[in-house]
Length: 161
Image 1: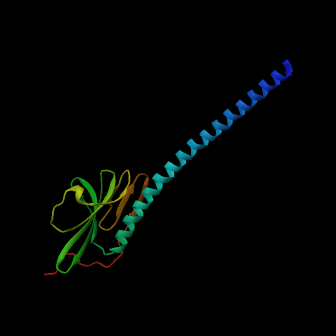
Image 2: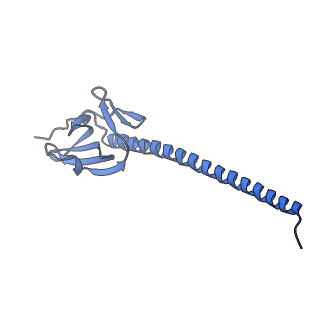
Image 3: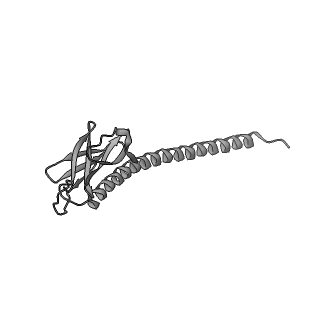
């Protein structure tokens, strides 16, 4: 049996409609994937910055002693210093940003260390510290910032004689 001309035109039209539908469906899926990737990336970046600032805030609150938390220069980078006395020795916990990572270095006061000696905590694009006044500190990562005010009792952080 031979197909008539009308049947051939109908088959071609059906195939063309199916191809157009397939292209539209594929285009919709690709646009959705690109939109999801952009939203997920933005969400991830904001989440990492918030987690980083939460980590810093928690670290300060764990050592909630006035005058033992301050911002100081560490090899040309603003760094957060948290002082502690163990026995008769003063120690610093130094939190800073180096090579795209938040780093933490625990060291005895007066001992010099290069930037690379800190333990890598988490990867973030940026981290900055600013001493607002005697007690208040601002930590910023990306577009997010947190103000930290140690509320603890004032005590000496110098070694006991």
